[in-house]
Amino acid sequence: MTSLPTGPSSERFSRIVKGSRNPSIGYWEYLPAGYGLGNKWPLILYFHGLGDNGNGNSDLYRVLYTGPPNLISEDKWPITATASNAASTAGDAFVVLSMQNDSGCPTADKVNDFMRWAINEYDVDITRIYLSGYSCGGGGVWNYIGKYISDDLVAAAVPVAALMGEYIWNRLGCNMGILPIWAFHGDEDNVTVRNANIPIDGLNNCANECLEDADLEICSAPLDARKTIFRGWGHGIWPITYKLDARWGHDIYAWMLSHVNYDAKL
Image (cartoon, rainbow, N blue to C red; front, side):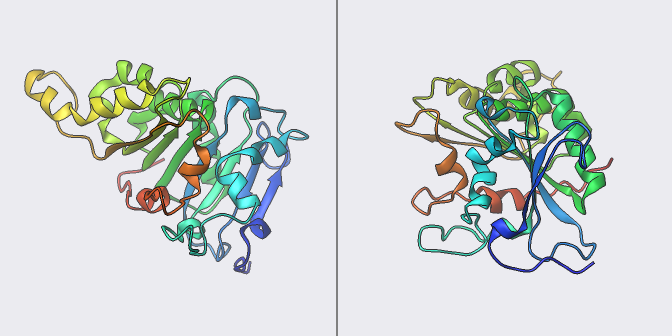
């Protein structure tokens, strides 16, 4: 097989309907330039919000409304530096898979099942697997952390305007510190900003808590717990999180690649 050529990101972006490759999931597939020669690639799994749920076939277009699928389809994915997107050209470092959820928010099992299926289906570097989701999809990322963090298979997570962060912190506390997490939220979001503040502030206080509670499983500072809170913004922060407009000064893709989980195993 020859490797995929360089060019606009939309030319390497495919609609994969439910049942054609995965029996239970429809999704969008982005393959980077150079994919196809058997090399192993970092993987981003993206999970959309509640309003983009669908049947994995005729509804798949809804997944293109937000996040990386939107940017890839519109050739705004960060594969070439521009004046407004000078922060990163890391987009072609990743395979990006964006499943369509059917109902509710993605469960921990749905996230885990799709990830493990993707590892077997694609040329994936299992030490560089990254989860990100917006709104309800970000809740799916937190759900996965809440149930499967001990599997030690994910290298980093980026929940955006996400539900469930406070709840998962209350369940796991400092034991979440083994996973690098960068949470994004608007301080005027109706999905309360506590879902970013509570877990990230809590994680960054874990070193102090260890001094007080010798029974904690994790008695150290977290590997990397950070948050970006957009002042004056509500729920619709996905463009300023994923587009990498230089004025915001963050690069989640380079940050993902900085985290390698050398202990990952299937």
